[in-house]
Image 1 (cartoon, one colour):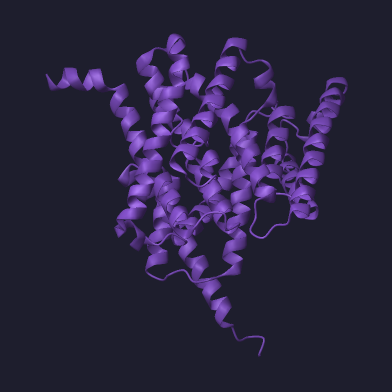
Image 2 (cartoon, helix red, strand yellow):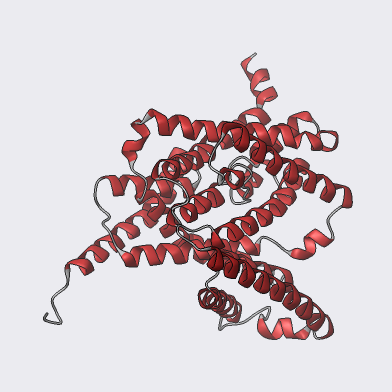
Length: 397
């Protein structure tokens, strides 16, 4: 082939790049117009452009989307400062653990009673702090129930990601017991080394705190902080690939490493997340949307399954969240439970991982994507309605 002749696959990739550029440009305006979370809008855009054939099969697009997914988990890790857990109020920590354990036990009983797929034991209690940050714009940083919700959700997100990764490490189609055993062994060694590494670094930075400033200075024209974070992100991905472990956990741990030891740079998380949410992460959401067939919405089985999953996730959270009633009040307990019922990013993540590992069917995958969208749209509106209910009642009278 002549070097100047563009292959058919290259044409597809170029077309996809143009479509991605258009989505990146338009999605903030569409989200503002529809009053939806931008991530949900990007999934919807991906579904529309996929339905009309603007995006074809492309391995490069999938690779870029995977990088966006790993970067999303890296940023999720940056929201988890391990020192926060050590400084957490003892009673709140105990209630949080009890709440999380109750969620998983309730899910286990429900899955057993209804004879559902075992993966729903992880799906139903899954939690993410992604959309919680949006609520702070409406309720403010001083909102006690929301601050409590954020702390509990952070702990629950760590549990969700660890369990998700452990499951994804060996529950693949046609995986032998020997291979599964190796995966568990490698994962145990990796987690042990991480714990040891965190302790060693904690002592090292305690004795030599100036090392933090050398690695990530307060002011720097060469963006050493970004370079250091990206280098850690890349190295952990390489380590995960070499050891054949799930990159998701590695990315999350790398992010929590940055948050725990380099919290002296207050704007670091914002700088890292701005790049991710401006490019890599939207590509992941657009890709997820493109894998969702819009025709499925017309299939009542998928729609009912999606609504059932959402209903179960809300009811179980409300029931388990009653342990916080004495601390935050009944109305705030309802808001607390609802705020945990829209784990958009992690629900998409577990659906994507389970589908790629062929643990779940195409129908369940589509139902989970639809559930994530429903939760992001409906629950956010429900929280605002309940919180303003008295005011709305007064205005109507």
